[in-house]
Image (tube, rainbow, N blue to C red; front, top):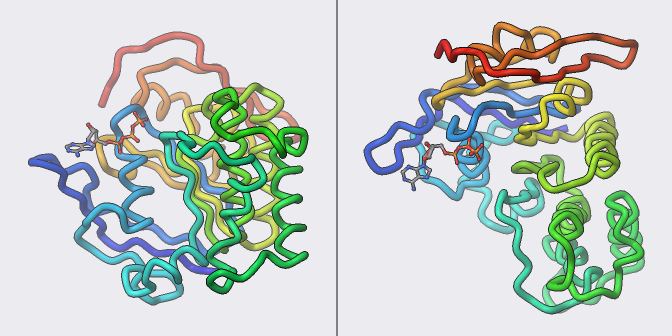
Length: 260
Ligand SMILES: Nc1ncnc2c1ncn2[C@@H]1O[C@H](COP(=O)(O)OP(=O)(O)OP(=O)(O)O)[C@@H](O)[C@H]1O
């Protein structure tokens, strides 16, 4: 298990404080949903963890500053699905997914059978095996998203960071995605994913971090964070909340005046 810690992380872009003294710890074994309205700072937080954005404060992995790991070390520790999905090269779907194994291969070495099995498993999980030989540039939006997610899974890192991984996926593939994340978390790894799909987050994430205007406003299990009060305050929506044996059921139903 890897321990990812953020200590008083502040990000200023232009003249705006986009993240304001964010502190959190992720011990491993958690599927963490990062929620918050458009512009709250979710992508910025994820891109700050991946060291794409300069910040003040400390971000450490197992006590060591992430910045000190170097690009190669980070690629073996963190896999990242960016929000903007685009595949520019007309190569096969399998070749794109296999890129996830690069951080584990020696330069110019061929993929081993074990690497091939990991790639095949990631493709199976994202239901893209039937697309294996298709050109990656000739896919639908949801198919492309699943291919890029499979690349992230193939990287087999202790920490997975995914920016809106469910966007563009149909309901079955959304559920398959969050079930995959939950299974990965159960094996001791960490998944942190920004999500706008409240029903998915509330039901499948072990922990929800709610951010608004660059600050963490709630952090805990869905039952404590996904409340009618928080949803009204942060998103300006009224939601129906129910619970069954598997967890919380959330249905946003109408707008309410925003209170924050
Ligand atoms: N380069 C930049 N310069 C100035 N402000 C920026 C820059 N990039 C992002 N921002 C601002 O930072 C804030 C946070 O943006 P961010 O993309 O992190 O939000 P988000 O929570 O991921 O939103 P969404 O749900 O819409 O993807 C926004 O108000 C955005 O306008």
